[in-house]
Amino acid sequence: VRQFSIAAVHAHSLRRTAAPLRLLFVFVIMISRTIRLLSSSIKKNTDPVRWGILGAGRIASDYVKVMSVTDGAIASAIAARSPQSATEFARAHSMNDATVHATCSDLFADPNVDVVYIGTIADAHYELARESLESNKATVVEKPMGLSLGEVEGLVEVARERNVFLMEGMWTRCFPAIHKLRQLVASSEVGPIIYASGDFGWAFPADQPDDRIWLPESGGVTLDIGMYIAQLGRIAFPNGTLRDVT
Image (tube, rainbow, N blue to C red):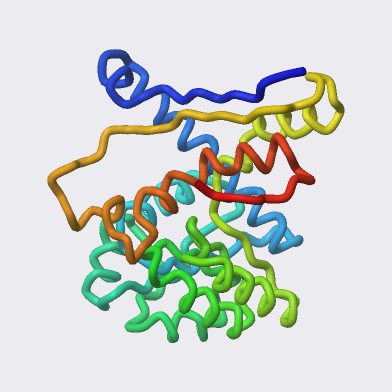
């Protein structure tokens, strides 16, 4: 009998050591690996996969920065809430050859975009992802993919009907450690799992009510970081059925 437990290092301890630099290095390596895996899944030839970026916020910025040092992927287009935001984003990230689109719909219609990355605020994920899929674009949606089971099931249904690639951007699922963990659980090498627990957190501003962490219309802290812990249950009990949420 085994207990399945993962504990993450908290932000207050990171500040006291050189861990932030190590964490940043791991972040770059793992996002780069994720982009390579996605690119190879979407396009099988040797041409770089052309990514269209939706959103000009911090998450999209992190994604594009790592993409710039990743083989086989380029950011070929950008659209945001305003053409000005998209233009400033492209300039800040040296996207000199990228097309700056006035609207998201224009980006979906761009023939030079192979896959769309949606890094907007969460309450816009469903509508944008649906339009992307209906435009027959391979689509990667930042977590959470939707704000309800119905939204996610709707996106999956459209993707299956059109035979278009769809993935939630849960980068931790691409960690080699997570793949190894799944193998250990599947092989029963650690014995039967009876309990899964986790601890995850970092410092974020408590005095900024407009921060995405505090916005209930975008899922708040539960859908923003809570799923990192929730997925442990899926790993520990891959064939389990969720009976209750408390």
